[in-house]
Image 1: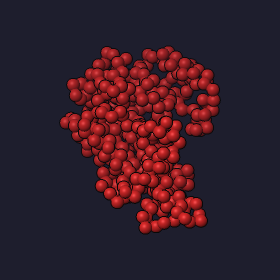
Image 2: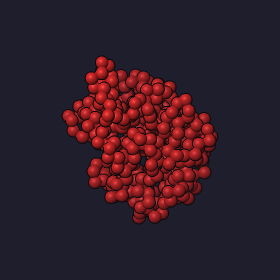
Image 3: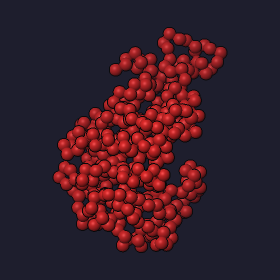
Image 4: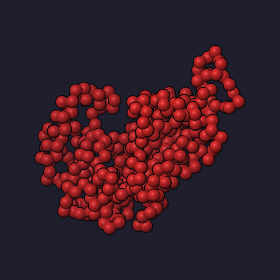
Length: 377
């Protein structure tokens, strides 16, 4: 809607995108993963200014338009891995009522004594206690691949899964060294209490995705904003308790393929968006949010050179059969958009609006549909 801004920005933006290594590596074909924008000091170029003949080459570069960079804040990276999020409960007791009970299993466990199960159910639905079922999650991001549903009787199977994975990690040249360099550790497996989902649309499991944006302005704490619409991702098969091997019935994050039903929360009459908003506010309003809002040193260096710096995450939230929300994951590296045509028309329109709103916030500092969260720290 900002025609003047678009007219001034479009040529410079197109050229900068073509200059990105990822664009060249793709054979100059469009990619679904979006390069976000960061304005350097100086903001938008003025049409009236002409420094292209300046003796300083940097002045000429700035005059051609704002530089492009990845949406590069790292605030949420500290809880982006499953084991990092599970470990945060020890530092922040308020999370015990917001996350399923979990415990960490060493990546290289080699005896059944190394396989433990959560002892607290955190007030989860009573069906969970009766079934004594748990979810085994692999150390690294997997879009549902590698997730197993287990019971306390499955220790031998769990140990076999872990040892085979560890052997593969050791066999891959420099893989473990790379993890140590990039993450400062080798991530652990997570075993988590199984939360029986509320069932919708003819008995199907689902989870809700909420997007949270952090605006970083060190030395002040980061400010959190939540997008005003929530996605709903629905299993492609009806839920069944006697077949946990049916991934299309039990995995709701797209691992069921394109059959996973992607809709907006407001399209599902059984769901209440205010419940999700209140949950996100409770999650980020206490000591956990205060820890995340502390801007990492690497971001402080970036922010010293940037007009605006943001971090983005996608919270995956399960609603249990009593209507209570639980945080399943914090996706610090938000996934790419699904292929064109996937999801309901409202879902597709939401993706476009979401991207437009992100760019508008980054360029013009206009939050629009991103609502600020109350922060007491």
